[in-house]
Length: 343
Image (spheres, rainbow, N blue to C red):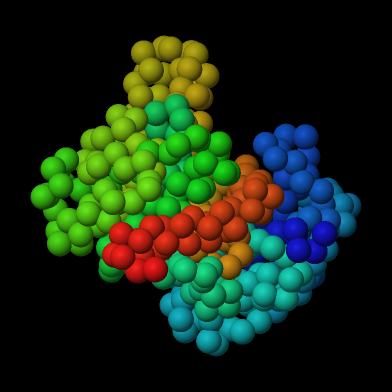
C-alpha cells in the first residue's frame, strides 16, 4: 500500500491547512470523482496543525501522517527556501516518494520549490532531458493538454519533442484519448514560421512517430485541431495565465449582464461552461519526466481542486504513466538511431 500512497502537502497553498484537509476528506467521500481509501493519502505537515484542522472540520478519520516542522511560503525563493528549510512539507513529500513511503506527491504550494525538490530529489526518468509541466483543460468539450507551462523556459528542440511524447502518453493512458494529435504552438501554420527553436522542433516532430498536427496558432487552441499543444515554458505559462484570466473575466461579465437583465437561471445555465474552464475540475498539473508522480496545484485551490488533484495522481500511478513514458522515449530514440544509420 505504501508505494501507492499519495504524499499530500498539507502546509502548501493560500488556505492551508484547512482547504488541503477538506480536499483530503472530499477525496475519500462519495462526492469524489476518483474515490480513495484514507490509508492511501499520506498527510505531510505539522501533526498538531493536522489534528486540529481535522477536528475543526468535524472529522475523526485517521490518515497516515509524515511530520514536517517547516513550510515554504508562496513568495519565497525556491532555491533559498529548499536549502534553508530541509524539513519543509514539500521536501518531506518528495522524501516520502524517495523512501518508497509514497508513489506520488500532490502540492498546492510554491511551484518553483515543488519543481526543484522533485527534480533534484527524484531525478528524471531514463531518457528524459528536462521535465515539463502539463496542464489539462476542456476548452472544446474534450481534454486538451498544454505543456510546458513553466518548468523549462529555455528549452532545446529535443526537449519539445520529448514533451510531445510525454503529453501523448498522458492523454492516451490517463485521459483515455486514443491517437492524440500533437501541435506545436507557433505564430503561423507554415513550417518556416517562428524562431530557430520552433523550426528545428518542427523538423523533429515531422519525422517522429507522433500524430503531428503541425504548427498551431493561438486562436487554434479553441479549434480542436490538436489534443496536445507544445510550447516553451515561458510562452506556455503566459498562455495558461491568459486563458484562465480571460475565461474568468468573460464568465463574470456574462453572469453580471444576465443578472442585470433579470435572468434568474443565469448561474445554472453557465455552470457547465464554468466546469469546462475551471482549473479545480482537473485539480492540478502533472510534472512529467520525474521518477515519481508529481501534481502541482494552484495556491488558491479549494477542497474540490485538492480532491481532483489527488484523483489525478492516483490515476497516473495506477495507469503506470511513467513506465509508458520511458518506453515511448526509448522507441523515439531507437527510431532516430535507425534513421541516422546507427545499428
